[in-house]
Image 1 (tube, rainbow, N blue to C red):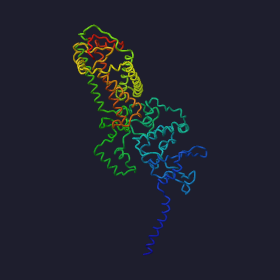
Image 2: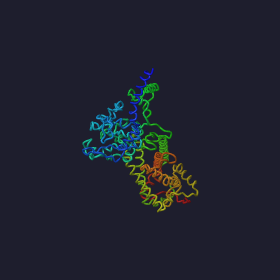
Image 3: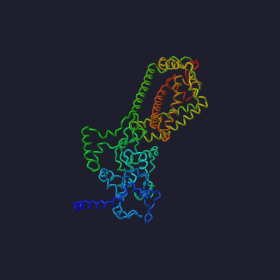
Image 4: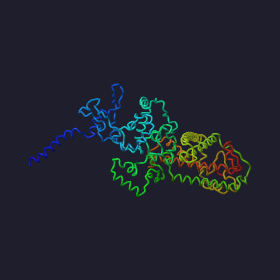
Length: 557
């Protein structure tokens, strides 16, 4: 019995003793890597080869701690030569096979992107010189979805591109060209600095409307049509979905040895039974506030893509109502006769509009028309009849700043000349005067009656004009300008306003105000035809003289 026990226990004891030194030598990956990072985590590490060439051996410890490979020991990829002194000497004694590459672990998945990778412009031009490691640093790659990049990932990805495309020796080595032979100006791109901060290079330099991020296109084939992203059917919707759908996971990874095939088959069968559409998860949806594509960037606003369809619908209805009202009123005037039939008193002419007022008025009108047309082309980008997006951005920006300057001149002159008093109504009998003016527009004008209030140099506006112009020029216009400036400088926009995300609230307010001014402009142009003759009021804004046959009753306006 003792012999049997000894025959069983002695081999077991021998195995334990043999395994003890091995387990003692094996340190946890985090501790082992900390030893490596004592040197390789030093940013001043700058080794050189025997020939004097620099070697990049720096590994940023903070980024490695966040990387998807942080749980692996350095030696799992960088194998030693098999001696105890492999990593105690400098340079280290490494395996003759060299470090593992991406395909050693990810080869099964990489078969999916092999075609795209080989068709990449980089591979066609550089051949074997271009590898996975040219763009993906195994020490810093993070486990973020490639189609939903964070701000940090965007900056790092773009830095990866620029590290080669702006490096004198590196670019020459890889392409055979001098770095100044390439065009990195991107002059066609409006607000390019903002794009570089929020959009990755690969968004425009890979095929649009796909999630194929590995087939880098030649420069001439890269996306230059802004509406690819800035429209309701934005390509970013397809690319920047939150996570792979069940059909993606089940179909793409089945039989690859990466996941449980039984579970994947269950997902596939469930999808086949329900007839679920895998593409539905990446289609633009309307959120509870009416926005589409609101998930492209957190708390942000993509012009042309992040639209509010509820506001668009109401704006369309209001525009139709305003147009219908103008056409109906004008049609009734035509039937009644545009020229007033009962003009009491002699013709009266008075110099009412100073030169600076006329110049401001016509410049303001031109700028508003330009801003409305270009703004429509930006908001509804991609629709038939809209202007080129990039050109619209540049023209809109220029016209916007001219409007700011023009409004500044307006306010200063209004204070200096006392013109601001024109906008402040006399509270005495205000309701009665509103009634008289409203009655004229709705009834008296069709009967050929004279205007109830005479236009004079001291009082150019009738009571209803004062009621409209005061909030328009001193409340809505400043808000329109402020929201426009915040959209031009999005970094100045508060993160939240009244509890809502600042950027999309700013853009929404800007859109609502701009549309309100557009409707006002239509009505304003129509009302300019309600003088003694169709063009008599328009003529006065050129000559400065207001001509009419209105009565001279000055009853405390």
